[in-house]
Amino acid sequence: MGFAVLWASACLVLVVVRRGEQASWASVGIRRTPPLWLLIAVGIGILLSLLVPALSLLAGLVLPTAAGTGGVDTVATSLPWALILLGVVTAAVTEELLFRAYPIERLLARFRSPWAAVLVPLVPFTVIHAQEWGIAHVIGVVIPLGLALSVLYLWRRNLLVVVVAHLLVDAPLVVISLGQG
Image (cartoon, rainbow, N blue to C red; front, side, top):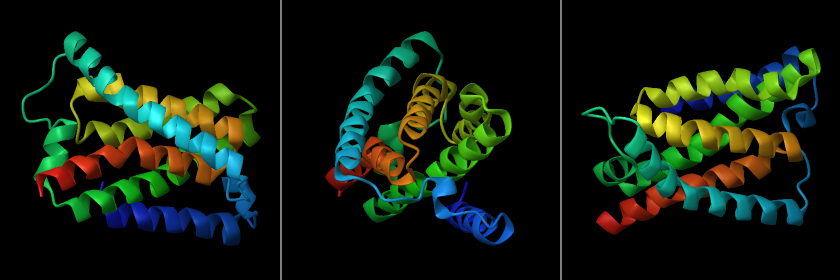
């Protein structure tokens, strides 16, 4: 999905929250973030980013990788680092609002089920990633990390916490890209 579409969608959700629903920013996890929570987000983000290569390797051994689907290294080396950085920031901010904070809060309020709140938005999150990544990466990395970030959101109910963790998960793409320059 294009950067502009993701940012426009995120802005639209924020307009809906404030003007349409007349809800507070806290209703999408935008609230004061204690420094300890940011440290927790950094630790979890680093841990998850370290898991990506292991999950990718394991998924690649179990599931076939289709020809023409780019791996993380292919994506990171095929585009300029500035574009990769923009993609990483865009993904962290917009995906966490669109696929975690907003739907989790609304589904929890409606159904009172953390399972539904996590699993329902995981479907479109997975679908948009399936367009660019092979099935092995989607099943082995995208779904487990999507679940982990959803659980982190449920635990802290804070958008900045999951944005920071997501940024750190994707940060190695920028580092790899810089190394190619």
